[in-house]
Image 1 (cartoon, rainbow, N blue to C red):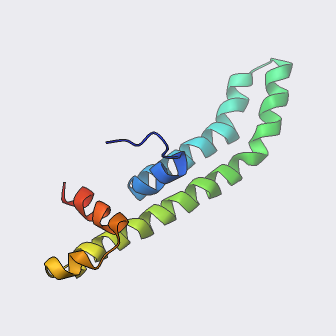
Image 2 (image 1 turned 60 degrees about the vertical axis):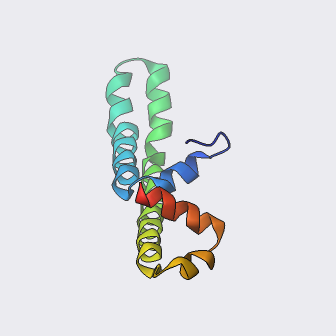
Length: 106
């Protein structure tokens, strides 16, 4: 069930890492080459695309950070599953980790 107060960052961390990486590459391509092509001869759109094109690497870095975080988060969840040996080990983990365990089992 999706929580109402979940931020976009939390969602990107929970998704597989390759989704954030793909979004980053698509945003980079759109900002760097897509907007200038769409601008055509319109002076206002050309001005906008010239202002946004230098931000393309920042978008790639931004989504790259989320991809790396998501990769780490996934490794942590798998390690958490592997460390569970019985009922007593389940009792000793925080509720948030237990929530991840239940979600991973589904």
